[in-house]
Image (tube, rainbow, N blue to C red; front, side):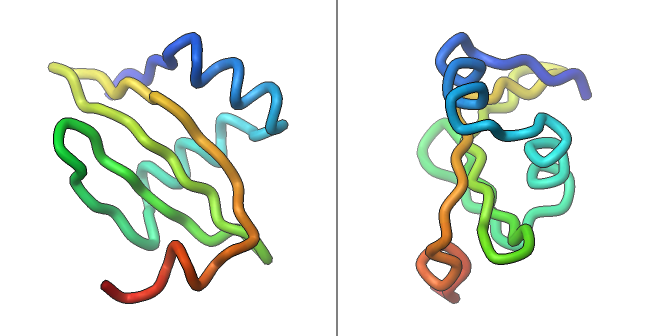
Length: 80
C-alpha cells in the first residue's frame, strides 16, 4: 500500500524528529490499534516511549494525518 502524508503530518514529523520508518512500523505492526470514526489510531512501543500514528485508509493508500511520541506508555497501551 502506498503511504502519503498530509502537510500537517509532515510538519509535525519534522518538528518532533520522528523517522518515517517508525511510522511505517507502527502502522504495519501496532501494539494497539483502534478505529475512531473515519480514522485509525495505532500505537507501538519503541524502547521507553510509544509512537502514536493517526491515519486514514483511502482506496489503495494510507494517508497519515499526524504522528507523535509519548513517554506515557501505560496511557496508550493499557487494556481497554
